[in-house]
Image 1 (cartoon, helix red, strand yellow):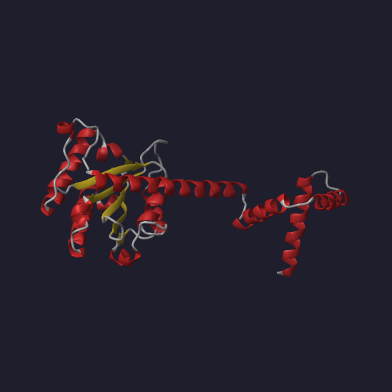
Image 2 (tube, helix red, strand yellow):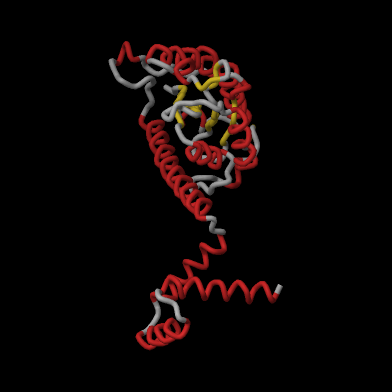
Length: 276
């Protein structure tokens, strides 16, 4: 018995959105990708730079600090269905998922969409902004258990049913807290995707933090690298080398190591300018 699978995750930071999009466009390397099948993939919305430009263009000036900025859908089916299907049938399923998502959440709210045919189980990613009447309104699109149940029902009726897939057992039957039911292999896929997302989010958040610090301090990437080199060289300095540095500081008239370092950096820049 094969099931249709719909998963929805809210995104509350620009870094999270970038991480999703870079994975979806393959700008970020993904270990489980079969590169021989990547040419079967389809991407809508452009590169991460293009997507984020569109995001900033659409983002309202006023928003809550804890607002849901976007949400991502993952639409797929049990591996026993998709892995035994032909490439044409996989593409038909991906197209049906894509059309359903655009109709349900609005083409005007779509930031990025990708059909991944090069992973172990083909699936579709879709990132939307929860815009309603010019405002961020995730509750309108996703709010409440009843709304989520209706989305699952609609996905089954308009997509899964035509491919002979079963709908996951509803909460009313299972008394489960989950909106949908997936079998073991599909759950494993979901967990793998979650771990990958968490890792990519941490990487993007770290990059964003470094960029903000550099912007605030007005430090260029070259200067950051120079600081790294300076630290590495300092840690390798011997006792004899420290004596030489101490002598140079004394002769320079500087009161502290920081002043001496700034003096040396200014001298280095003057030398570079003369060369230019």
